[in-house]
Amino acid sequence: MIDSAKLLEISAEWGKEIREQSEAIVFEGFDSPNYDRSAYEEILEQYVEYEDKVPLLTTMVVIYGDIALAYLNVQDFKNAFIYACAYLELNENDDKRSRSAYDILSNISLASGNKVKGVEFYKLAHPQETLKSSAVLQHLTKQMEEENEEEISVKVPQNLSDYEKPKTFLLLEDKEEFAIRSTMLTMNIQRDAAIKHLEEM
Image (tube, rainbow, N blue to C red):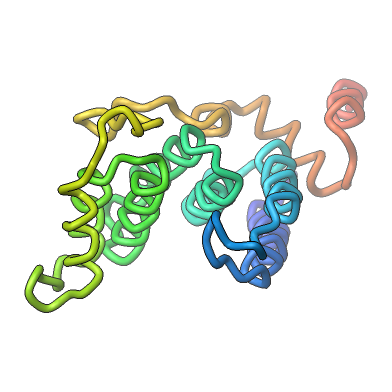
């Protein structure tokens, strides 16, 4: 019998390890001479492996936000947006995480040239700030006024639910997929070996 509590413990610990590695890299901006894309690519590879193996959607409630940031840090704005929206959808009833999701969406929008949406999402992430009280909001609003439509690389749909779902969003509701991933994680084996093991049971 699969121990869901054990699966959650293993998944959470693994996700925490990757996040700590990511947070150890100081991000100073894409134009900084210290920006090391390869370091962020290594982090992203770990998250891709994580998403390929972890069987519980429960862990993705947090990890989708981390994956969104990982894609943002390698300047893959399309995938960053996909995972940020998934993070928002899974946390729509959690005020703190919803604001975190809007913060990520704001950063993605600004980085991809969509300054109007960047300001819109920033306001949702920081509802207590006003144009008068916030230097950040003043700066972003000034940027917004200078937006060039041609520079926008990722268009944001009017309804945030109209986005492509991450591959695990629906997969993790599949019992067969759950069994395969649970076997992979608990036995620390690859997918083919897990499928073979299940077939022999």
